[in-house]
Length: 541
Figure: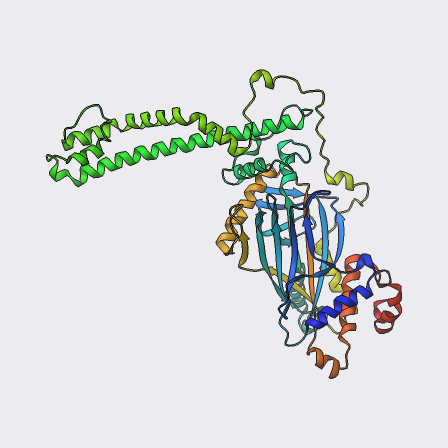
C-alpha cells in the first residue's frame, strides 16, 4: 500500500496540469512580505515507519468577499475576513489495510504567536469551532485526526431502496447531516495585525515590539483587562513612536495598579496571619496563662523588642502587645520597605516592561516634528476584494451534496465513500517554558483543552472588542475528505479481479477534482493524457 501511494503521487504529477495538481497541505502563517509566524500542516504517518509527510489535496483558493463568523460565547460572535481554501483529500484503502493516521501539526516560531481553531462549517456564514488554542514561542502541537467513512452514494441508494417513503425521507435527512459533517474547518488568526488594529496603531507597528506584545497578551488573557483602557484614541496623525509611547504608558500604568493591588492583598494576608497566630497561642495556652514565657519565646513573640513596653517575660503582656501592636508594626515595615525600594522597583519595572519613563507634561504637549508621518489607514480586505470577486456568498455546505450527486452518476462501483474527520481526544504539546529551557512534551486531555480554549476565547474577545471589531488577517481551510475503498488487497485486485487499481483511483480523483474546481476533465488534465482517460473512463467526458 505504501508503494502504491507513492506511485499515485507520481501519477498525479503526470496527469494534472500544473495549476490543478494536488498540493501539499503545508502553509506558512504570515503576512505578505513578512517572516512567518509559524507553520500549519496535516501530516500522514506511513506504515513503513518513515517520517510523516504532508498530505496532498486538490485545493481552490479565494479571497473572502464576505465575512464569516463564529461564536465564542452566547453573546459574542467574531467576524473574520481573509483567505479561504477549499481542500479535497482522497485516500485509498485496500482490504486488510489499516486506515491512514493523520495529524494536524501547528508550530510557532520564537517570539511569534497565532490562534488555532478547529471545527465544522455550519452554513455559508457560520464556522462552528470545537476547540481552540494559542500557539506561541516555539510551541509544537500535534492534534490527531480520526477518520470515519460512511457508505458511498450507491451503497446508500441500495440500502434504502426497500424502505417506505417516510423512512427514506428520514434516512436522506440524516444522510444530509452526515455529508455536511465531512467538512472539517481549520481557522488561523494572526494576533499582531489584529492587536495593531485594536490599539489604533498602523501596520507593522508591533513588529519589533516583542515585549509590549507579550505584556498586552498577558493583560488580556491573565487579567482580562478591557482593551479600551489600552487603546490609542488621540490624534490620528501622530507619529508611530508617539502612539507606541502612549500605549506603553497605558500598559505601565496598568501594571502599576496590578502590583499595588497585589501589595495590598499581601499586607492583608500578613495581618490576618498575625491575628490567627495570636489566637492560636491564646487557645493552646489558656490553662497556663499565668505562667511566664521563656526569654527566647517571649522575644520571638514581641518581635525582638519592637513593641513600646518590655513584657519582662510575662505571657499575657506578650499576647496583648502582639495583638495591639501588629497593625502598627505592619505599617512601619511597609513604610521602610517602600522608602528603600521605591526607586529601585521603578527602575526594575521599566526594565521589565521595556518601556521608557513617562515624559513631562511640557514635553508631551509639544507638537510632533515635521518628520512625523500620518498613520496608514487600514482597509478591510472586503473592500479590495469587491473589484475582483463576484458579489456572491460561497456556501461550502453545498460542496458535499454536489460531490454526492456526481459520484452517484459517475462512480458506478460505489467505491468512493465520504469520510468524516474528527479531532482526537488527546493532543500532544511540546512547549518551551523559558528561552534557554528544553522543550517539555505533555498530553492535553479534556480539561487541558478546555483551559486552552478559554484562554484563546478570552484573547479573541479582547482582540475583537467583544465582536465589534472584525478580524482581517485570518485564514480558513475547509477540508473535504473521501476514501476509495477496495474489497481486496492490491495483489488480489490485480490478479483475481483483473482490475487496474490505478485507473479506478484516477477516476475517483477526477470526480473529486471536477467538483472542487467546477471545471470539465479536459481542462484539468494535460493534453497528452486526454485520449488515454477518454478511452478507459469515457463517462467522465
